[in-house]
Image (cartoon, rainbow, N blue to C red; front, side, top):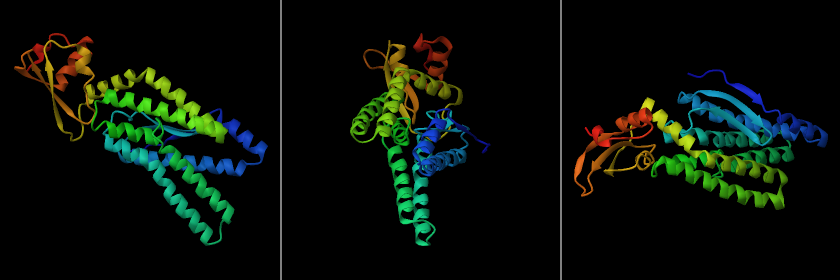
Length: 279
């Protein structure tokens, strides 16, 4: 059920306001902030439709963020739709600006500025850099075909590479773009260092809630004996797992549903005596 979402202004946002007043571009900057806010509302509306819990919308000098705990724990399809809902809102805003120009409400210069602002925000957010919308879509798409731990790692490395590329572009063309890219680079370096925490959070949610939507069953063969890490790192986000335990000759020793493995892992911190879990 939808609940009231707080709107927060980051302390550094006021610095942007002061600079815009000082340079005489207050109306232009505030317009971009409003576009960012509507962009985030697109995410919020889509997230509410799936029952996500939105904590707040925070406006930053480099954009905005709708804070929620659902990323990484809900179906990939929901993540893709919620991520794309933000850029989608810029379509109707561009159409509205053309309508306003057609009826003479807006000047040609203001209409062009409004359209360019919408296109920049939409296209920039679709760049595959986490936590931009494009980065979230990339991670969700990868989760259909790769183990989720690997999806997280690939997403952050791709984000780092694209951030460096944008920094180079911004260095020669736009200081704001350079600054935003630097922020995204530092964010993804930090995320890469703690990616195991995101994966552990995913496993914990899976352990407590299981699969809440229809997914294919993936049969994974494990040769006994096997290390805990080689088992626990093979989880797919969009699959239900049945692990087949075999001996060193390939003979089947039995099957283990994912619930038993997760329960054992979070109970002991390791998966000891895996043969005892065979059903």
